[in-house]
Length: 617
Image 1 (tube, one colour):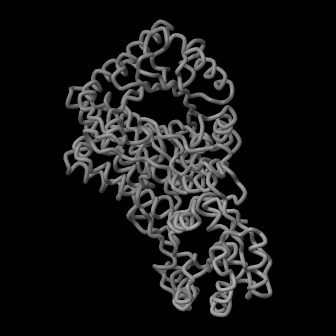
Image 2: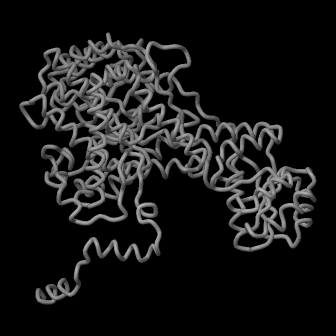
Image 3: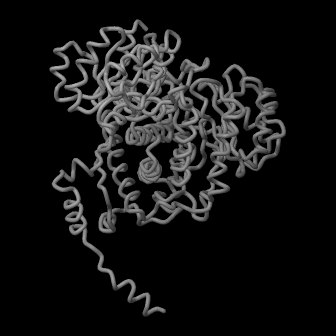
């Protein structure tokens, strides 16, 4: 048997990288390799179409083991279990407690309570945590920054009253003044001085963290992956510096910091982001000379993004959040929140929250993602992404340090400017369909109506205010918002009918009709496709009979010279006339009075706004 195996493996000669490149070049038939196959990412580095063992031999990421410094392969050795977390808005303590007890029986083992500052008192906490066994689950709290220390003291008293083992209590208080500075523009430098007191208050609770790095806010504002990574590291380092300068032991300071990070739709890149983040954070903490390497572990609560969620075709949000959850689970995060699919337009329903829970449980219990530690390790592609993201993220970290640290950068507004510029670029790319949002700017549901659904107004920390603030703010707007506003405006005013006048070459007219239907349906237009017409007169007559507001001529480039002008003249202004494509004869058609053309180089959003204006919408 061994001889057969030996023969099998020696029978095939492994091709070299150059041989692969030579074969690819032949298949490309003269096309430029770099233009056709190399991916130029938004993260500042290129991705090759294939990787080989030789590409990772020089990397350091594969050298460590799980549970070992620098923790690139995760914080644990024996399993990949994470906490399944759900957020609860605790406006009423009794109602929040009832909900918490209910979902704890449905697979949740981590609770996130959002408590208004004026409700932080012992009686409220007693009611909120009634019958919840805090030693058995993770409990997390978010409240007004100025009430965080008060909340810590109340929780300590409650835990001691219950006789809980301090070692077994796992959780956090979400204290992060930087988030308020970035998103609200308020100067919270005075509030930052509370951080050392908060850490001191909870120093006897080794697994209860109280300083947050909420880079999720950057993710939800459109930040690229490398931006979230680099700024999160600088953010956390600023807290380390602040705490140690105040006399807090480095080990204690590091063990009180928790990262709340977002997960965007870039599956492998997000997986690599968490690996790179752990590695870099471990190295940052190491410079503070902690007594134990365990202080260098990065604890991450990962939350699926709101930035790419949509109001229309909202069930597609489930597909987005599921792949995002897979990225975080495989990457080995501490806990995870799956954002409910209906979050963009309503307070999540019981149904959407149940689905969000089950999305994690499916990965954990049925797909056994909790059983395998760092399954991406050794993948040439993932190791390359990890290393590349680490290098680019480190550049951002160093740039912030050169500016005087994260606090100085926030006060100068450079962080806000950088994220806002990215958000503007991504919205522009979405308008041109350089960045796709399935169901919004690409392949929209032709028949869907809003049925009263409207984007929720962004509140407090989700959007920088319009009023003047001491600091610059990050302006967070979901990527789909522009198209949604246009579509709802169209629906509320008038729904134009767009009729496809298909004629000539069968393959081209069908392709052009499909493209045009998708293009015009992005604004909520009613689109009518057709099998084809023998003459343009027949097509125009059918369009007018159908009550068309827009007639789209769909044919081949060569045939437009024959069909376009006669169709335009026969229509005679009774509806808007559009040519699908950018034919060589476009100048001639324009000279004949045809002014509307839709094609792949169009700015879809601006074109549709222009058509609405022409239609009086």
